[in-house]
Image 1 (tube, helix red, strand yellow):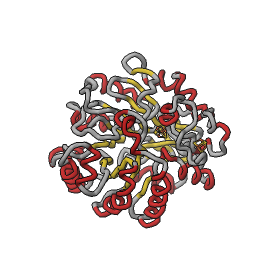
Image 2 (cartoon, helix red, strand yellow; image 1 turned 90 degrees about the horizontal axis):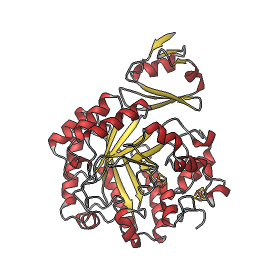
Image 3 (spheres, helix red, strand yellow; image 1 turned 135 degrees about the vertical axis):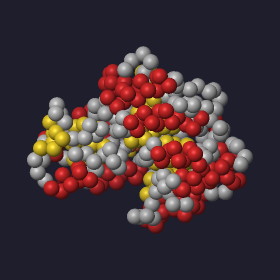
Length: 337
Length: 63
Ligand code: SF4
Ligand code: SF4
């Protein structure tokens, strides 16, 4: 693959609003503090450009997407253009009517964040009392309409204790997959990085492996890409199909994210790395010509550039930036530990 | 055989592979070079004779 370059991303995350009904300790957007919504006109214009560039899927994220006043307008439009639509939500606001409209609009999957299978821990992390019960209610409604659910847990010192139970719980409620996200040093999480220490990492990996065997063929257990070790190693050793999709960190290569103000960033967590703005330039122009995208695709990062796994891993740019250099080493690199 | 590709199918070629999004199931399908070579991008047609592949394309609502 020449410089990890493809003509357009496979999937794009779009954040239409920064408004949120929760105040999570690990939120990467500092959502809820401002209430910036993308205008409907801008949203439609961007979606049209993504379709013209043959982007296959859009994940609607936030903030809380259900607070976006034009949520169903954009979903309907994406659907009309034949784009695959998924949604990331805390599920608190899902009503019977909303779940029904989601299924009518062919939403292909909903990612629901859950940080514990009891009220105490989930509500504490999500910072709003009573949200656990409401999330469960939302999940029930999604199930009623057979919308595939993926539960997502942000892994930290707190949630690793619950990780095993959450996966069992995900299976019990009929989720198609469980995924972990790393707690990355951005947004609210920057001030709460004491929740992330190295010591939970080995415990996390151990549980992940064990559960992956237990639920093999029944439910997908997605490991944390940001921790990279499994992804890098497995692709490296299997070398089954080292194609464009198996690049480790997909930021700026097979994916990117668009924020509510029109900024394009390499992934939904790289919110401080602006590659361009869609109110000023068109999508294709930024995707092809942004110097940041070009450099990320070269994958000539400190430490990684001498690593045999570079092609299948590449480290996490969010964590590299936290240490001061976007193109520097990933402080969580499993190999350096 | 020459088949017309449905107008709502998103498809493109990358590194010689053909990527297609099924309008029916919204699955992303990746085909190898042979299939990619049989596409006429100007006319949105595919000229292919492998029954197995053609059945997949039909099943997924692509042709
Ligand atoms: S050095 Fe970079 S590419 Fe190698 S394992 Fe560490 S993070 Fe991944
Ligand atoms: S930079 Fe890469 S590894 Fe880090 S969060 Fe973004 S996509 Fe994931």
